[in-house]
Image (tube, rainbow, N blue to C red; front, side, top):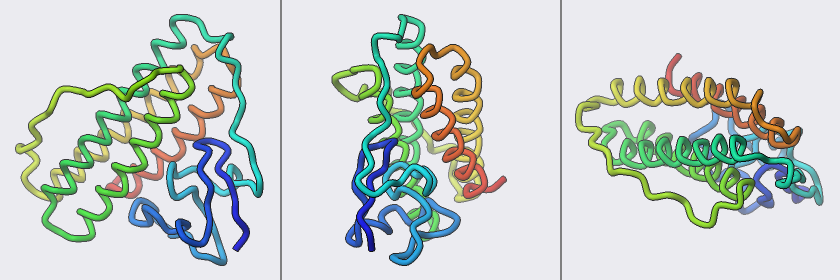
Length: 186
């Protein structure tokens, strides 16, 4: 297996980690066929042998851009926190595993945005009570709604970002979230 780097999240993919978070994908990676970054979920075209992370010019970002990216960090942390709790609440082991893997991917998305905006720490958000989602079906429906919201967020706000490579990152992460919609049920 050829070692590749994800140009979106910067992680190296090798034979020890190619199948990390496999439960968060409709089709899993294999040593012979890598389809996704196992850390952020982007498609194969963003995985390059000796690839360098997408470069962007933070100086082109205005206050509104930074606010949008800050909100993207919070959106992804919020979803990551939900999936972390949902993995504890789910009854079915496959659903538990999927939520745990989705949590890791959403937190990676938050780290990507954090790095773009130069945010020093991942924000700690209000601890939410998800007890009303008392079945796997209810958790999956809530997950699907969260993914739809993320896609809508990226599509709406990419138009306001003043740096073309950050717009590309919003597009790419939106596609990952679209697959999560399919994975979680609709």
